[in-house]
Image (tube, rainbow, N blue to C red; front, side, top):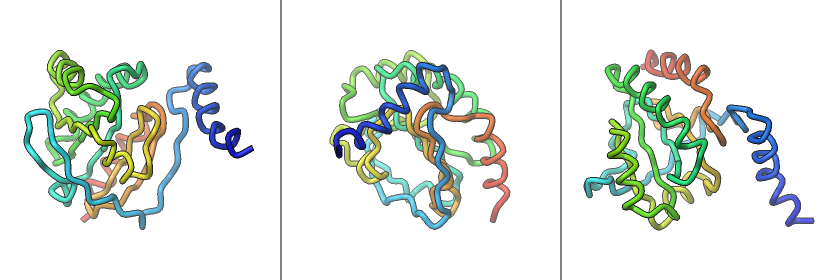
Length: 171
């Protein structure tokens, strides 16, 4: 029975995906949920951490090169970043541990991704964000470092844009 319960989220994602839904699962997060203190290595080898982005609205996107919905939504991620980055909005794309760094690098270069791409080769970043297992998974973080929204499945960009604008206006 535990096995069946453990597979229920996956089954709902697969069924919703088959039905063509763009946002498979959307769960609001309590504003009290603090984003974890994680450090990461970017594709260029530079080390950074999430704390360095405090004071900015941030979208953390967990993705993989073999994930069709991830690849499909990446142009919208880029458009969203271009729209809001002049106001200080940040996007951090985190590749999953099973994704070979060379594939991630080729993907990012071929699509000219303008935002930082982190390699989560140990899976530690995914674990620290609540055990992210499904891609794409995106989390919106406010300027104070609180997780405001979590999308499992494709990001709802129609919902995301006004959220970014509202959070950016907060002091």
